[in-house]
Image (cartoon, rainbow, N blue to C red):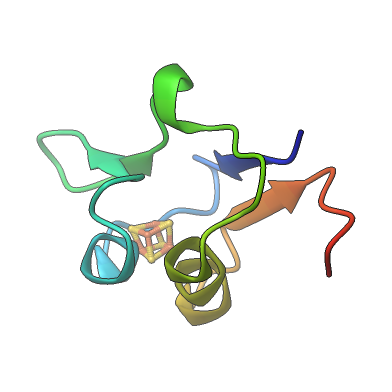
Length: 69
Ligand code: SF4
């Protein structure tokens, strides 16, 4: 099953991913993104998450194990 990850070393906290997929990404008090464990795997990655990954200027969002793309 594909999973979504945020590379915390790359994330710069501009929160664009929140605009695309607020049901997937979470943020700490300083605005850095993460994906809680209970939201990180999908039978099919939602378009909103794909858009968030494509729109992340730091390329900090990875979709792993995705065979649909
Ligand atoms: S868009 Fe990318 S860099 Fe910005 S908060 Fe989200 S994961 Fe981090």
